[in-house]
Length: 265
Length: 133
Image (tube, chains in turn purple, green):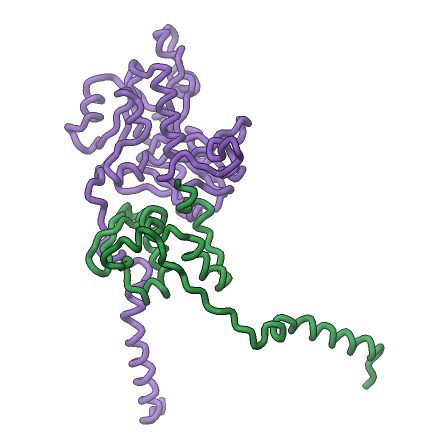
């Protein structure tokens, strides 16, 4: 290639101009962490978050309080139509929650009352595998999260989840009670949590936003000790101790999803 | 060369041209004054040092990039604390941090966004200061 002094200087000039762009481009480069990014001071940090539900302590009041606390904390809309329901944590009958556990002559108390079900935050989550946009993903501490910003509403995750833990916003949640008050104004119950928009899938997030600020999940806080939450990687945690001391079952364990919500019998 | 229905075609072209360029000559010579986003909120007035998380120039040109990065860091990397350019720590939160000081969304955010004709969809989910009350 013929190289003249002139073209060499041109290249030199362009390169020099490019170098001046570099620092400002770096500052906003994708992937680079924001300056000093860190967890908040009082954040609860764990390696394997899990929930333990004590069926013997699960009274009618506890169930209602836990569901109500969650619904309020996350601005969850209420629909009369069953098909439109948005559920994070809800009541389910024993036989529906544990279809593989239908022994005869079970204790009446066990099968008579509904129990609480929620996202199991599986160790091997099928919803994450099927999500085409990585809108749902598994954090290092085991929480299966939704990034609503990325959700395109394809509902593959709903088909993938064997526990029915995911709900789709068929309607604008901002137009539903209790997000709308009696006067018809938008007045969400929780000022601390955003709403969702129409066309995204939502589910329980193990109250990731509360853990980040040092608080336990809303349902656990409202459960009067019937729901325990903690880090299973920590041998001395409340949940690890509870699982060592009593017999527990999980929902559909034979599917291999490794649920992290345990039920103490 | 002969144009069939030349009168109609040319008349049509002229009408099209006049209508198509209407915005250009209608707005010609008129200058919409650039908006001045207002900083007149109680919180900002009460601050001893009136500093945002970054300096003014960076915020003015790059706040959308900053917010985008905050969003990914909070949701996907579970890090919520940010070191401002003066070393102060801030929670990376649109509704709780940005809007805590800039509680006048209409005079602050909307003033420029309307002028520039951009419609960020943050507020379809995130709560505005008014909605949080």
